[in-house]
Length: 112
Image (cartoon, rainbow, N blue to C red; front, top):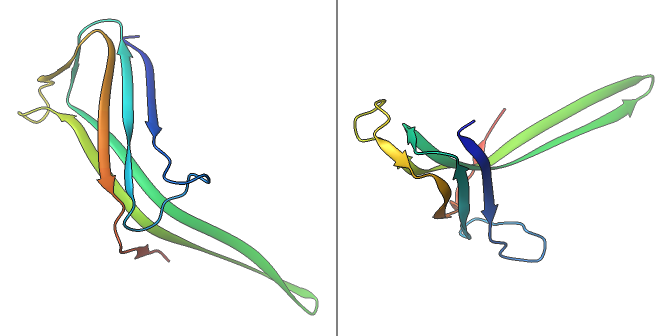
């Protein structure tokens, strides 16, 4: 394989490693390749969501409930070829580090 290692690390803004709306999320994507590698797109995606499930006993019947809420979804393009699909972007052989930074939005999206 051409890609020998791929990792994404982020910088914590507090001891718990949690983020809130308006916080800045920054970090780095590291790619180690064995040879020059052509890419069409290299993207870091971040999403914040919550899921909950609970049950209620009503006499002999147990009612199951669940819900989910998406707080944010963000894509940060690190590399993207200029001619859509021709693989014109190059990742050099060896260790490549790509920093990223974005702000977590103050709005949230509700999912049903």
